Image 1: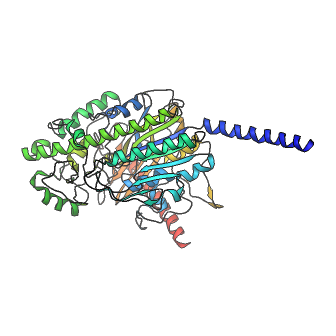
Image 2: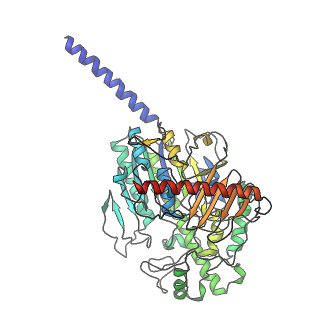
Image 3: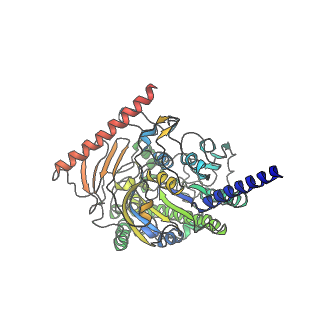
Length: 535
């Protein structure tokens, strides 16, 4: 009898522990991150664009919009940063001046991806979409994954995996569309989560590969925008800027077009121009300088870009509908952002370009180009790969009914994608690690922005960039920036997001201070990298 009594007490004790753990897990928020690819700062309706994005607009209306948030200005470095909390140069994913980087391998063991940090905190993690990181998702902590790393086609992709296993290519001629396929997987794993792990919080990373080139979209989506861009990019930029100013997202001035700026990779753009003929435009020219043939061709390209963004918004709506069906919408933090600014790249690769194919169909291969990229990045200068504002500034929407009481507000707080892992770990009830396997880890440049959910606090931040010779540092309200082989320029971000008034000669001491700081950080990263190589 005494033995049975002890067992009963022990069972009751264990039951209380299990109930307490279940209650703790239930109180932790789910996290759902939507990442777009090559989306411009002003492409969404809630950021001043004319593209129809009602789902994201509603999230913004009932959540927060950040106006000073940044990425790394390129796809794979941003993806590394968003999942590790470190600059990609710190973890071997991008190059330093004297230390090579790359898109494969080299990530140190202590640079764990976010799912591995969340697992001991009780989370299950899922990936749907573009991977573009070293290693494989399941091996890096995701419980289920579907990767879409075919960057050359949307209608019959060839490079896909499911739970780290290669999938057969989609046959041409079907109605398969990559954006929908990514959403379908997200919905599928969320349904499974509801059925099998309802008491467990989830982290779901949904990484779309649109509106990255090639410009591919279903014909009925393109038709919605027929004629909408015949006015050209000059007027589109002016109209977007006016709406953004009214919304309070930006102030100051609209950047000027830079006729000398074109695609960052001329070795690819020139053959593309030969195949596309005189109707392609490879520089930031005024719309009035284009021929009628060029204007007609360029307008069609923006129609397709808009259709791609529109379709992504629709698919995001389907994923969110599933979260609502699970009864988890109120306690899910939803973040939406882009991996870099819109792209000025022009190239033809993959299956090539058929001039007789309908624009936007599987047989065509078109890129947005510098003119419309400038409009997508309104009011910023430059594009993807540059670390001027046009390349590195991203919209960021945060929506969480149980955790964000202030609705529809703007947040001017300066932030970076390296902050996202810190924010998620804090919400999950954890703390950022300082060591891995008893070895100290380098300091992460990231910082949680959970406090911004309650108020627009803005602690002074120092943010650093380097990509393909393009470099920048933002400290407080000042930003020092230089394109490859160009001299440093200094701008006041409070009044000049367009980076049009260079203050370097007017404020030489401030310019030297920021330049010295950029060099100090760069040298520190190189020393750390070389020390790792010696081990």
